[in-house]
Image (cartoon, rainbow, N blue to C red; front, side, top):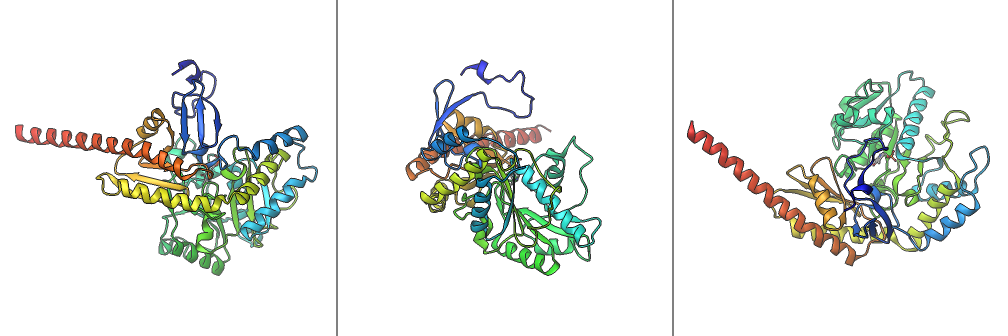
Length: 416
Ligand SMILES: *Cc1c(COP(=O)(O)O)cnc(C)c1O
């Protein structure tokens, strides 16, 4: 392992990086600078929808780079219109604003909700947000995030948020009871960073109904769970509902930075010229990446693949792991899978890396698998065959640690 390549003397210390440097990838495999190969079940955190070096994506992007990378939004950008129309078709919504990241998409959603409120005469509009939510790391989006670790050190937080627990319609109703300032409800269909926590179908439908009743915007952050990952274009579509505002990013451009806020009729015309903008947003390179990503997902039936392979993953992992002490739950939709253990297990990320597998651990105790949508069954089985023994030996270790500490406690008691 080359230490030189793993050092970061000049980048800010914002990530606890693993001691490898990545070089290149092909399909669902990635190589580090020393030539070691890894199977990719992380996809750059649900970003590399088409894996690495996709034979249909690469030539399209090469052509686009040579043609035009950026021109700014003073002009019409044909692929922006094309991608917006496609996202409208897939979501059943109508208008899109483009930006470059997930937090920017959420920032735009928050601004939409506030202006929606002001247009209705609410001078202090409030947005309902959720425990364990993750919406990004700008001041507005970290304030909406439900994780004190992410907020600590950056107070004062932005006001205007009401926080409620997930999947509890009574809690939502009582937190907003007789409050005329509520303008929107904002959540992820499946919380990603919060530990792969899906909103229930029933809850999604109940919130949609409540938002209709109260004339609130329903804003669904599909930055991580959207773009086909769950086997539908957008995870909320499993519940047969439609949001009013939907931020997207991660998987939309297969690795080219891109974000989007898709809006339905209730929110599509809130912004006027001068209300919002961003220099890079919607540039020709990012738009081409989005257009081609969607085209290839359709051509190669990757939604079906995500659903079928996701079920295969869940069945196999359940078979292998569910009876083990220390395994709490295996959950998720499609290729967004969480394995929750009883113990903090971030060490598993490093152990998997050593064994040639890329994955992550989120919310301390949840092993997260979000592989590229192009993965096949043989590759999925390979992921499972590397991961299962790592989990098993980790749990055996925890078990014996537990026994040792029980024994110590017993001996201490006995000696008193
Ligand atoms: C990753 C993520 C974000 C933030 O996206 P960035 O591109 O990192 O700013 C927001 N919401 C959800 C659900 C995410 O998973």
